[in-house]
Length: 478
Ligand SMILES: Cc1cc2nc3c(=O)[nH]c(=O)nc-3n(C[C@H](O)[C@H](O)[C@H](O)COP(=O)(O)OP(=O)(O)OC[C@H]3O[C@@H](n4cnc5c(N)ncnc54)[C@H](O)[C@@H]3O)c2cc1C
Image 1: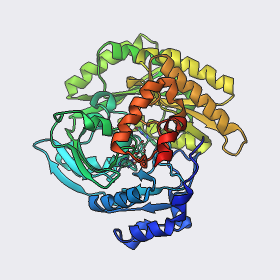
Image 2 (image 1 turned 135 degrees about the vertical axis):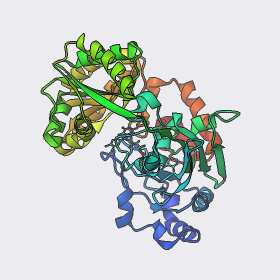
Image 3 (image 1 turned 120 degrees about the vertical axis):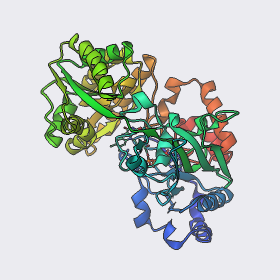
């Protein structure tokens, strides 16, 4: 994976930039010692690492504005960072950049139950947003598996999803407004305490813009009443493709569970060894969760079970208590960590039409055999959001490159069947060079024009999302 050559003129004035930053930030918020900047050298895509020139940790919108104004005047690249859990390298630094971390911006600013919203600073973690309102019977719906750690800032950057987004939508469907600081330090308010603002849908442009258009410091989020109850059912199959066909049939039947999660044998066995959730010996399993009143739950489960039975499951386990429900989810929630215990892995993220699941699962198996690398599948099947996990050995020369090549082939397959390069993890550096597989040159150019408007000097996270060849002239002009 290639990154731009660091700007020597910027590196040369590091001390001058530190000096200026110290005029607007307290000493402890400016990190310049290489032994400390190293803490920011990567995000959760740990295959790629690069220490930033500096890292800063402002505490409010005004400080963010001051930092960006200085960087704008000095022509210093900035990479915004939430909690650094991106799996696409979205928060990966360049050697000449300032990492702008929002970890200290973590207050709840307002809760408004009458209008079902909460306003938070953007560094607040996803789970603690629900935590702030759960005693009053509310929750924030988007639930990435990383929700204990990831920040609302990164969720907005990547338009993140999660297991329960099948019913509630992803971040963009639950975001009402943002306070954002532009690269020149200007503070703008986009959206507000209401759905859908007049004029262009700028909030839609911001959400998923991967830290390239501005730095979000505050967010107004939609919160929902907690459902009366929720209940999962575990359905195991002796073939991946049959599980895929079952998902397609559930969606086709018009039933809308809150979640349909898929795990294949590798993921079932690995998380079972790790979490001891009592999963069956099977090739594939689905966790389908429905919610509502007792009657609604029974009605939905009846339909889902009837559909599943047509596919001859090897096991169908209904939950009879909260403990059993928690156990059904335990293995799924532990899957990424469990795989990480047995091997280095790269987690892909592509989206396909649900009806293509059986075909794509078979092709992923074949591609794995072709490249000689093991691949596990654990993903949000209901909305066709695939997460193939390619296992490789980071210490074995050539393995990472083989893994990257294999990942590219799988993501191209997603595009070929009518899907998309990313579902919820974003493009970052991971899929940057595949963008021409999804878009033609005119499409890319149109997207670059949008960035031109927000960040004319191309200083914000400019080495991401778009192939470097497409952005070279713009980046070098800054
Ligand atoms: C174990 C594990 C499980 C995961 N499961 C899921 C999942 O189920 N669903 C899912 O969607 N993702 C998942 N992820 C990926 C990741 O957690 C999400 O992409 C998350 O939203 C990143 O949040 P973050 O705060 O860590 O952001 P970071 O990694 O710090 O940054 C992500 C992007 O947002 C930009 N950004 C950060 N802060 C700002 C800001 N203030 N303003 C503007 N842009 C900003 C960054 O520049 C970067 O491009 C998972 C990751 C891990 C490690």
